[in-house]
Length: 144
Image 1 (tube, rainbow, N blue to C red):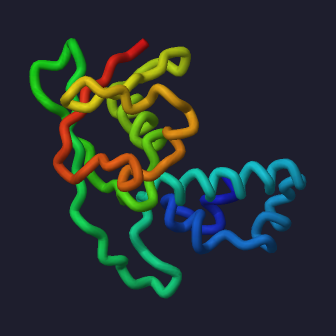
Image 2 (image 1 turned 90 degrees about the horizontal axis):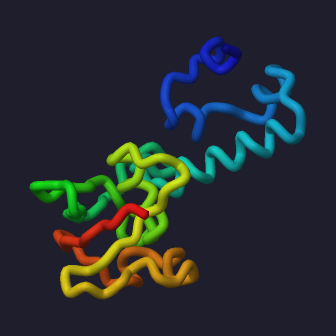
């Protein structure tokens, strides 16, 4: 693999070490370069990289969300999300990934009071802060 030859070991290396010149060296087409850029944007959207452009660790509030679903006996916890940057859609993706949900299924999220959180795709693009999903909140997930 060409990326391994360049010394890429994790998503952080993709984000800050691979240059346009490296992509040209690997012989990537323009379409492949576009896909690479989209992958970088996706990685950044997930909020897993907590280093800023200077290499210093960002101060990030410790944030966690508990969720339950009908077949779970106890609450599951999601951490490492930035509530000001991550969206409800990101939360849905994280839950589906964590629960190994098939790609042909979706998840609907509800507040503890039973209020649907994922009814409108427009609101799914809002940050967790904008949707007032606070640190330590417990939500319910229904897989459809």
